[in-house]
Image 1: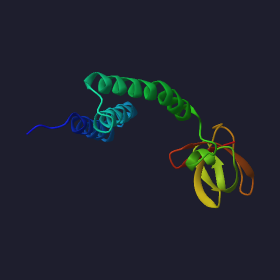
Image 2: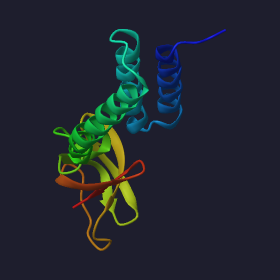
Image 3: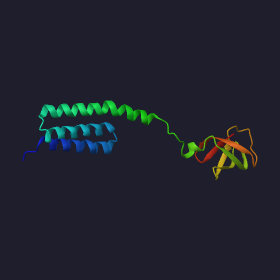
Image 4: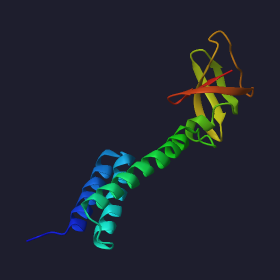
Length: 143
């Protein structure tokens, strides 16, 4: 049984795609696209082995050279909107139970949170508005 070259390229592309899913390395996806391009050259245009390998190398290299830097730039950007506990930092809260260096309770974003003072020697009384500086676990650090 003789298998055509284009089928070998598609098998290689599928193997690279599986590798992409398992390892989450985007470069494998770019190599898989290069293998599909080589399969097209082989199956549709009837290109020889040299043309297939050349197309695979050119497409794969071009994708890695162009797409990878763009993806790295996007990955390095900070999210536009803070979410989770990061969204709570810098917000104001109201003291529900006296807060000092050892603890207390505040109302933050409509929820009751345990809190402690950033400065252990400082005390915040009931009804006082405070600023949330950090979140450590389930405790808001205030000042």
